[in-house]
Length: 104
Image (cartoon, rainbow, N blue to C red; front, side, top):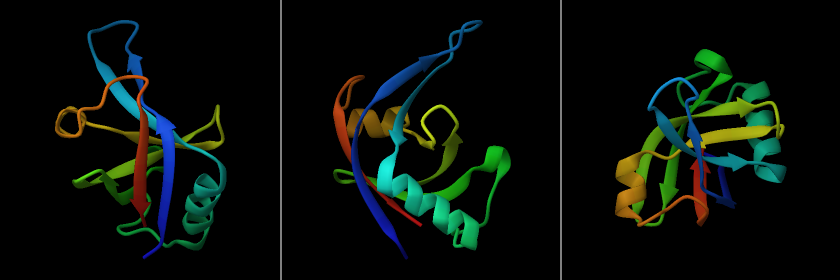
C-alpha cells in the first residue's frame, strides 16, 4: 500500500442552482503525481470508478474512512471530498489547513 501525506486548505463548493454544498481538499504536487502514477499502473484498491475517480483510504487526525478521489483539471491534481461527519469529528472549517494521508 502506498501512502501520500499532504496539507491543504479545506474549501467549500456551492451549487449555483440549489442548496447543495460540498467541502474538498485539493491534492497537488508530488502526492498528485504519485496518485496519477498509481492510476496509470492500475494500483487502485478497487479499480477506477466514474468520473475517473479512484477508491482510497483516508486519515485526517483520528478519523479514518474509505472514499474516492476525483481528477481536478484546473489544478492538475485530485479532489478529496471531506464529509460533514469528518469535519465535525476533527473540528474543521472552511479555510483550515488540513493534513491528510491518502492510502492507495
